[in-house]
Image (cartoon, rainbow, N blue to C red; front, top):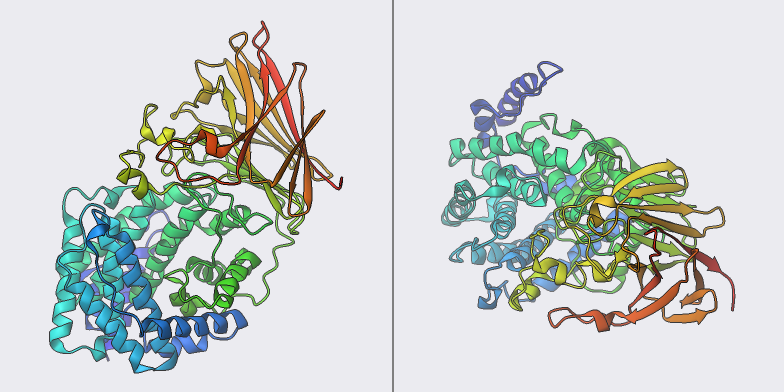
Length: 618
């Protein structure tokens, strides 16, 4: 009877939301909240016993491997003490919240898969310890949001195993420490446009749904706030062409929680309120496919790392848009490598993805995918990818446009990464640990001003990136690299605004040649006579050999010839990265900054072409 009431209320809500093709009403009614409140537990992600939905999705080998690994992780957790909040967490509780969340998810999913009550009791101990902590929120609301999700999932899936007193304790913590703290005026993320907004709204909605029977008005307020504000962050993150401005690693974070929110809404209301139809969201899998190099590493621009994973978002997107081609073999390989290592754990949300695994292919094949990707001229952070195939040995070229002042941005506009022969030759090292930097007195987190400490950090500023330098200066942090797709093998980049005051015009052209070689052509005008122009790149090549006409790089038995063409004399420089570090930077062993340098003539014009050629020389 309860489910009949729920279905009726949702039907009314869905008609309201779909009324009129021009506008979607994004709000839940009191009747819809009442129906959700009346439903039996669990209410998150599954409409019945989690065991039923989990087991029916174990149809592929990779699903069974993930399930077995989740049980293996749970086995290791029952032998460990409950997660303890430590004073040295300081003003950041995110690692603590995530550890609690990862443990609870692994334990409750393993319980659903096996029925082993030991897992349920261990999860119960974890959540009771978490709710007895004095607060979940000190300085960063992400900490509180992720803890709210962890506790809500445990409360929901273990409801029948909790005593009335334990239910009261946990539900009260969700409401008082979670939901109500999100209502204070200083919560900028509510209407913001970065990954925080996706994460925090998803976590708050989870808490609202499981406590709707206790405070329906608060639940409705939290859910409608999310429905009102999600379009802004989703348009910024995916429109018009699906490219995520904060890079592939933060695509994973934001999109994992965005799709988690969709799964929660769909299960609770049978409705996504048109959010899945926001332009670009149905194409965002193309972006992450493009950002996955032939070596299996991410195109690590901005604060992204090179590590690829199988994400919670992937099975949901594959199912919703029927796009099994969005699954990369490297994602499966990363998971299988983790399983083979016999180390417990994986991405903390991933075990929940078993609820949506039915359309995941057993043998991913992206070999017929597009060889050119361009994010589009209207994206906040423009990127382009050129490749001559998807084989491990093919050439892959990732090109970064946009501005250093973007969320999680680096001074890397006009930079690139290059792979061939199964080696990433031109690398982007990725992010620094902002917590460590803060402890050393460096205020580097989210301050894009030109004089910010942020640009003094080796991994974030200009010194580590594959960019053009003029007199060893910086790019202007508010400048913008505008990319243009010239043809299927060439991308143009107007970098002029990044070098205002240093040159009149700066243009860079990237070309993938038929044999797999790459040319990067720089054309600059309006330079000060005598100014030094350097086309620099970072490499982890084990061997750097000087030759009369350039350099020969060696790595893993593969070779890359690097040469430069200019009407001006070219000087090659190779500087170990360690010599460029400051006392707050982490060690950078086995990385070299290489630059082809020329001096501007009297007319202030420089044309410099750097060529990267895979070679079979010995």
